[in-house]
Length: 73
Image (tube, rainbow, N blue to C red):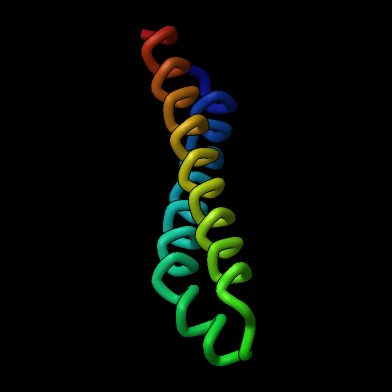
């Protein structure tokens, strides 16, 4: 792999890691945020769905990174 490819893969991996961390924190803090702000339960569910979307996006990016690294070898 060339240096540019490795840099791009590293950048994508960092983005996936941040999405996983952010999604996890959002899922953990969703009940506290919705109660603390006095929001209805449907907004808590919306926060859970956003967290799920972050996890799915990170999974897709991780699979694409894995495929790129497998194809280069």
